[in-house]
Image 1 (tube, rainbow, N blue to C red):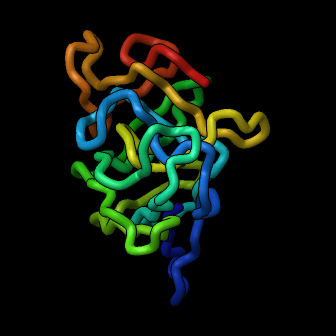
Image 2: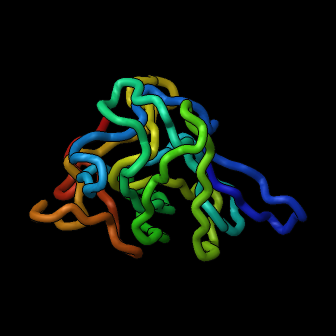
Length: 178
């Protein structure tokens, strides 16, 4: 979920509802380590405006994951479709963010402030690594998950896609797609 300022006094929320998901986190690596996972919320198109923060559900229950969201690391992303199926340009990527321990056992909304990012109509949000709850088994509006995924095309290191780079789902660096 992101807040987009459209020039109106109150920012408007876009993205999926901030509620419990099937998986509290991806779990390619232990908690606290970067995992080779890219998730794109391609069913949540953004309007033109300014993005000032990201929000996620900090899931206090594991669901189908072995752990909760807390302690996991991720990078928030803004991506722009290029017009070629499965290909997006990284418009912005956050610094490494850590999901805190929730103050409510079942979970709560977390807000991560980022420097203002200008977005265009139909840009999408995503995240690299672990800690943000996701659904991959929802046919109509499930998240697109790519793993193993790395901005390093040799796959020798777990690094998120860099700003201004192109992500090609199904190609080297972003091999699997669900």
